Image 1 (cartoon, rainbow, N blue to C red):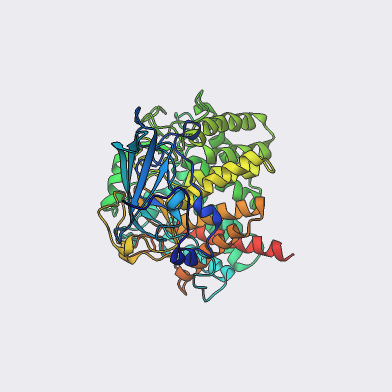
Image 2: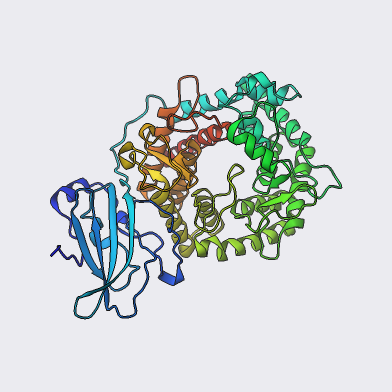
Length: 533
């Protein structure tokens, strides 16, 4: 009979390997069944923390036996009260990483198995091990500047924002075509980044301001005119004769829609530049966008995810996860003093509080991915933005800080790869959208289930979230994790400032991602400097 375990017992080799692992590693994330939590991980394949599952209850069962078999064929078991208990009792005994097969059996009062109530196969992710990762050859500050300069000097960027004309077809290729396909996303990123660089009278500052103003002009040229249903909103998609493959299909399918994720990003970018130039036109453009959002806000506090340009009606039932709207509306309140924006933000927060903060359906909402059913395409992006909002909006609130911590642990559990998973192979047991796993460069952070690969901006988002928790709680492990991911970004940055978007064999350059990484490096530097003071 297999060994029966009722508590976690660390054996020699695992205990030695676990010596520098955070004790929090052995506590489950968002336990299923607790406080009515639904099975949010129904599609999950990777787990760093001991998972719980939505296995079925059996009326005649007095207990449930969980058995986990590792890749070596070793089985470890424990008995639990419910089929939703976590694997915490044996998590220390399992190898630090590898494929695991778990089955759950219902047991009667005499100890007999009366039914198998569930089974799952998953990859156990290697945990964070402080000090185990290589250091880069240049500083965070140097890398941040190199990345920003690389983007602002790219020929396609200059052509798009300084010529006043469409980008020449011969300049667009498979690696850079997304830059022209998604104008709001790219333009907003460039305006915000260049606004930061445009402070002062240096030649670089002047060039950054000129580029920012050119990007604004481009965004204004694709903005819906007064009198139209979506007046003030810039378009999400733009056709170009050189688009091929996935971007071409996405633009062709969605060109008549505006995704409500992005007008807000553009308005925020306008405000970033407004803070530098004090141009009333920028403030007016941001206000027009904000007021259009207020007109479209639903009774539930949120907005449609996509709307038709022709009449402003919703495309599908999926609602916008409005967490990034919260910060924008609060900013509009600060800029204008108009209480209507604060009230709209409060209504949106009620939606977030009752919605994803309760259901844990952190749906990936990207312009190049179709809306999905609940839990089919989780991402850490809106989840992390929610954590950062909670910490900023409710400073010192223990309950909200605990929620932010739980979100951070979810994001790390599902999306952070401190080491390359699945032995560097595309394993059929992983049902999510991964590819070229043998070429992944880690530590890294995955984007979403529908693009479950390492992306530089995903590392940037995790860095910002770790730093937010560090500011709130002063847990040194948060800062250590942020610096480790920051060092990975620096190592990926080439001498000319080019930062790959995909940390793998695939090349597809997303300037907005590069600029997000540059900003994240600057934030690490800022936090570290504040500590030194």
